[in-house]
Length: 508
Image (cartoon, rainbow, N blue to C red; front, side, top):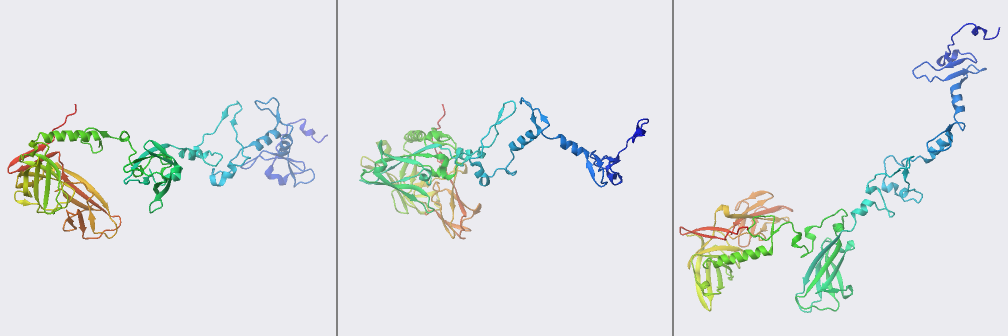
């Protein structure tokens, strides 16, 4: 009987030994890895002469089957390719990131500009070409500048016009002011013109003028041969890249403080009006509006029976205001009381000041006010000294009686002046504030209101206050003046109302 005769006549189940029990196996016995948590189901056979040696039949089969003998068909290829060649091709052409953290210019720029670096176009099997979507800051030119940097620094041409005038005869030196600091550093250009003639660069030298920080704000021009007559106008045309103003490539505007004088056309302003009667604090009045106001004011004065006078004080005394006017017609040389006098003080005045007003026509003098003591009312003298170069309104009742105008609270206008302090200051000026004589002046220090005689004293004539506590660097003193609004004036004089107003102008 042969070795396996017992299997020919009856069915005997074959149950291979589990691989985990391989120590019980005999030589040539077959085992399968089918037990445990992670079985591989590989087939093993015990070596024919060594019971401790196990041969993985499954691995031998896989190893023998994978190689040049396996052919792979790929769409688009006429002939099959061996699996080995396919895997080798994929490996050699696989693109992977140099650094998983991304591109860093300082670290990777050498690779970016390496001549061996390839420029490629991605294409799929259907022939469709693909290009990546990237930011402009990630694309560089051959000089190493990103496209975004080039775009930011792209020239945006700007023009400014300025001019200067000579102030002496045979002048050959002028000073110009740049549209912005360090103008020439950006490769910008300017040209000079005298009249309509371009002045060649060989005819003059230009030496830059710098501030204490070393920034060039302008230049001194010296002509070699030209000597200009007095009041001759020299025009300067500035042509510059306004994108580079201030050295910031992202800058798209110019600071208003850096713009050259006389270079902005009124059409470029946001709001300009020819109507002087428009109550709009954000609008700028045009020359036409001032001209219209002058005409309306002149007509109103002509129709007021000579009761309104605009004049300048000529007295240098602190105790008198002297006004002399020349009448154009005989009718203007008549004192028609009451008279409203708008006068600008020549020098500071004290609280006891007298007024003299004389009108002259063809050598004939008429005294409208003769040393009239100016008061707030019949029995109230002026409370404060009067500063120089400010307009005051005086009502002349007769030749010896005059009152400084006071009006109801609703007719006051509020203006402010801000002063930034240096260290250890006590005398603070407010002469830069626009206000009407007699205005009520309030003082604030760093947002806190100060009180006269408690926190400071005030000199109205010199337009200064004296603080009782010295300042620190950077503190802000805010002056607020409540002044006369001259468009509407109401003043009670001797129980009679004197009313003056500009005729109301209607919009057609």
